[in-house]
Length: 591
Image (cartoon, rainbow, N blue to C red; front, side, top):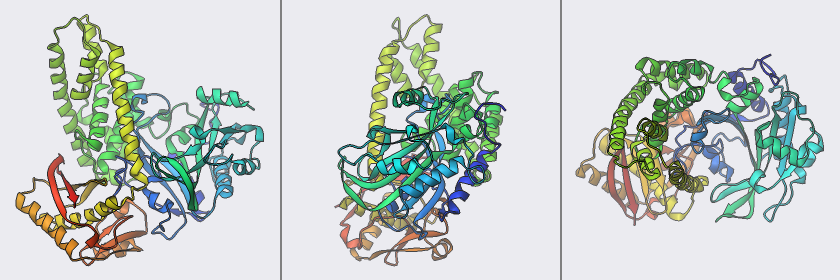
């Protein structure tokens, strides 16, 4: 027995399977994970929660599967805590285990099944119920105290282990508009002897010390938020639950760190040949794992958006290496290691290994050149010391980590104004955080009139590009605001003026034809036979929703759209540019 909370020999693969099987047995349709890159969703750079790909259905649209009960393990990426990577709990990539009720069951079933899965030895994880604590919403001007959840919980755990907390702890809400509501969270005691009963204050202190950790969250989505405030109740009551696979695996396997679980152990062994520090080994393992998943889902290094996140991860990994280098053999070993861990769940990693290795190798070679440039910039410094602002410019412009600047300063007998650098960095993080929140804001669908028009226009643009440039053109991403659309697509060279004019003319021609826009929920195989465009395997399983624009465009999408192309107005391409190798971008407007 390696650690006190060791409960079973369940592997991460078995935990994932048990979760899916448990809810499938209770009438839930198992969905495959959506891509990390949101499809037709301008809200975020990556899917950061299991509910994001399901937003239209939580708002009331019927799911293509026809089911009101869903379950899956969703690939997610969050980088807001990237500087915390290397501790016991943080990871940039993770899988969110989630189950949903779309206007079907509510608190009674959600709470019971959460408890049963966590504690059942036959069907679930077999965790000790005496180590569980629960929090519920204490109530405010938006919604009453959640006594209903408390009364349900009292059937399973002592009342003195249920704690009321405010909205900042137990209310889930998007950054902008969308469904929201109170939640109940489950915590697990990690201490060796067990903490036993805790007062409210003792519970908060134990949480702060990480003596207990949150392992599950049930959100009861019955309210609607508009313009930053709760305006009423939704037409249906939804349940959205989530449990991070990495964290729950650590708890089940009795490990103090996610990096000690079977999700990471083989990767850590490889990184021991790359970095001499424990934290460095964890950073390399985490960043490579995330990079492999990003590249598999079509992301390529660049200086903007998703590509920048990928570039930053690979650069941070390189900086942890002893010789500021990661060899081709080490790259291959790490990529193969990730593929091996996930071979039963994400086979497309194995089929993408060659391109993954190539992308990572090329990016590492580029950064080795950047390192030289950063060092040259430092050599130009004639002052006695290095200002925090200069250190931040090196960090933000050259991708030069502050640790390297500090090492250089130490060698030269200089100092860095770290306080000034931290202030600049904090401003940078705040801007990034606000940007992230703004992106998430539209995620539960900015359904303004113009955004819906632009969303529909991307379908016409996609089809027109394929007609003019060829069938190898596929959508690689989009970003829609009420002012314009931005559409990324696969294409190896700059479009000519003539090609842009042809595409523009085709889109406007279809708008003038006043084509009806309709949708159907049909079997996946039938959608393929009809020639519909879409990454079906990445999304919803046996049934998919396809939108048809007249007899012109047939494309998989969750909506929303206008009912007729005559509503769109005049389409105009404003700019066409490269965003990454083999990926072009069009910015266009409607007037």
